[in-house]
Length: 552
Image (cartoon, rainbow, N blue to C red; front, side, top):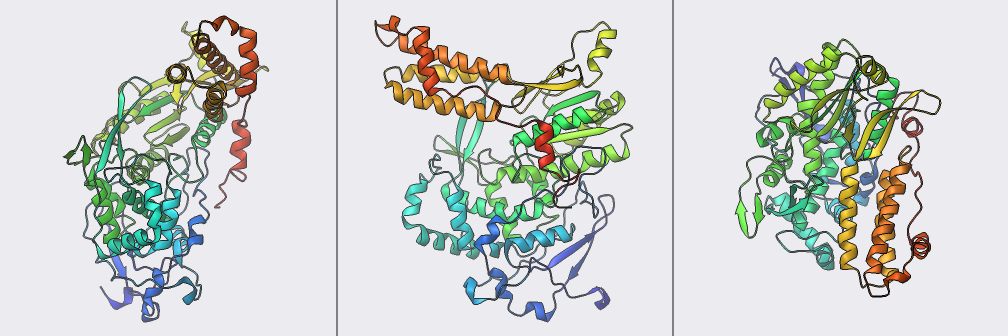
């Protein structure tokens, strides 16, 4: 490398970086930019960690409106497929300093990482582990759930907090000495809505703390990379944001066909080597990559028996959602965004929440070609679409009229994030998308309530009433969207009937529980069915500024 290509680098992340040039078709040519002696002086300053950086702005990089144009305008995005490459040597061990001992400079802490990632989309960060400081570990500890089930170590949150400072200092030392060892996840099974069981991996408490700290650091980078139509497990984004974006996309764009797709066993089939290669696009700190590899290879413990894991990341771990988003960012998001710009003839909108995504098309030919190409794309990375949860249906503003002309029935519906989406009309006769709670899931929820009421049959009425209030309120908090009032009323009525049936079976005096009396009781304890969420247009506009994100 000639000296002419060398130039001093002063970035907000205070790290040496590798600038990547090229694309996925031709190998990436990398030039190492060595920091000047001025930057090298006092290198221990980059070990400074400020707790305030935990709360930096976490706004999206692109608009939420799903349209044919790229959601992430700016420098060229990273290549869709990557090839293996050797990693640069990690920086030497850093010494932690007292925050007040070093003057504040631009580029210090987590905010500096985000600024650097935003400024240069090709930057590779070589020094990140020093941001995992005792202050960040402490903040990560308090972000964990207090009553979570312990992992294989049996350590609870309250027990760990008795000697918190000593434990965190020891944990911090082990992390930076390389003595930290990831423990296997404890296998647990939960019942899904369709009757099947979903495997969960419960990590040890110290693993949760370290994973949360590393996730906090990596989020500063990848929140600048993720595209606007990605919503799952991201800061300041929720299921309702994805639902609003989908509603706005279908209602205000030319959508005639909808592809409702789901990746089969996604979390259990993530390829570890591909995962690490994708991370290397932005992360060149070998210590961070080594930690992630430890978590991926830690294995699973079930009934005292340890089993090795060669693929997948455990659902339930703190780091898994971020890793899943990174994996799908390169496997699906970048590819799909490029496909709609280069190959789509008509308008294309898309919304993705984790491994569940919906793509709307103006042209049927585009939809069929996209589905065919998507299958081939996923096969390259060891994934496949779920045959029962992937459908291409006619949906949109003119679907009902066209199907009526062909002598067919009403337009088909699709499920997304707990709601059944239907083609409907407003009172004025204009097209709208109606969203109702999935009937199967509501029945499953009522069945769980029935079983709990049976166990609480002889508990005090006030105690049972308080519990039912929290259950119904939790259901309403998610499902109380515009147009779903009938389902809310039905859910409340069914809970009322189940409670009455339970009270009548408490003793031989069950006849005293008349319907009028149970109505007075439920009026006291159960919240009324009412809409709690705004209309999609209102909430969507509140999160954007004239069709652009706040970051622009």
